[in-house]
Length: 144
Image 1 (spheres, rainbow, N blue to C red):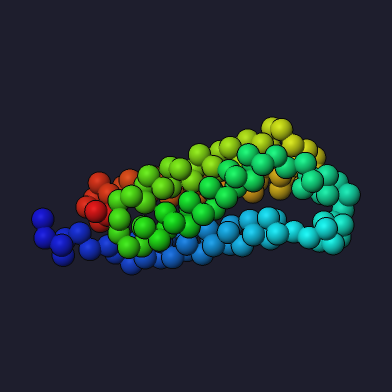
Image 2: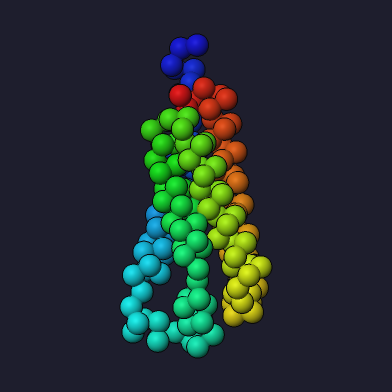
């Protein structure tokens, strides 16, 4: 097949750029949490303070893997490298680990209400979609 037949459409670029922006927002949120000062923590409601103080290191590590992996996966997708699928898989593992803690082991759902389930579900669905999309584009010869 010639390279012209494997040219990605505009939808590829839109999905890739939107996904990159989404993941960069995740990186920003991670950095805000990782570098939260005592003053920032004390400005939160008491129930939220307890959530942040008690986050295990493995959850913070999973969060980092999820967002930095997702960002790297998007960059690889946009430069049309099939390694994007593997990186999205690693990111998805981080998402599952982090969200499992948030939903089943912490009191996040009690503190945040329905948003404590809605946001993690959305993040998980986007992670699954990005892995599927990278695999689909690899099979179509868009990623090499």
